[in-house]
Amino acid sequence: MAGAPELPQATLERSHPIAYTEAGAGDIVLLIHGSLCDYRYWRWQIPQLSASYRVVAASLRGCWPRAGTHPDPGYRIATHVEDMIALTDALGDGRPVHVLGHSRGAQIALEFALRAPERCKTLTLADPGFRFTHEAPVEPFYLPAVDLLAQGETDAAAEQFIDTVNGAGTWRKMVGWFKQMVRDNAATLRSQVLEANRPEHLEDIGRIECPVLLLGGADSPARYAARQDQLQAVLPRARREVIRLAAHGMNLANPRAFNRACLAFLGDGA
Image 1 (tube, rainbow, N blue to C red):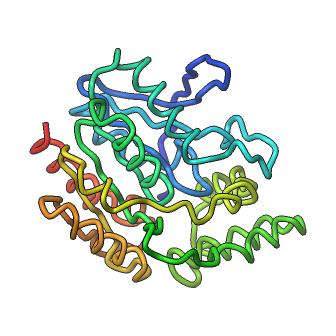
Image 2: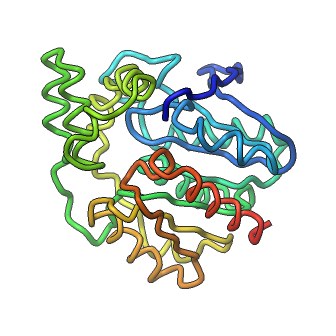
């Protein structure tokens, strides 16, 4: 991940401005990042995907470069969905877009497709971690990180979160730009925990009609594959791919395989 390319920044001016980066031309591919990230997370996807599509990667409200004060009760999935719909409507004149979300961003992507199905051309969910309505709420795995943030221990909080989702020792091995991105967004966990158990209805998901791709890291914690098992049960035509040599941060650990899987799916779903 060394030598990461710089990304130009643009802003959609509205009551809550949305910072984003874009490249390429054609149908829009919207990239939605997960926890502790922002549009910089997608720097290894944008160059390759933008050779065939207009790639738009946004920073969610409350994240860098317009990090707010946390905890913030307005930092919510529904608000982020509204923002992403507004962004794609503004940039694409309301035409359908390809929506790809990772981790918490996968829940935003899913709810985008449920709320505005006519605007969603394809849906890609990479390691979604949300619970379903038939499951009991569970204690968020990142509660220790939230406690560390309250004590001003940002790096320790980041290490707890990143190592839990990607494997012990991951934080220590990460390159500088990634660590800085995580530090810039670490405080969002103090808001995210307020909505940690927002559930999704499998019956609603089963009515999704657009093509769906489920992506998982071969070495991701088992809970992510379990999410995909249940999604595939109600979306039997969904394509499923496993990214080898990668855990939860699959698009960074093995970007070639991740990009190849996305491009193959987008081409078939066009």
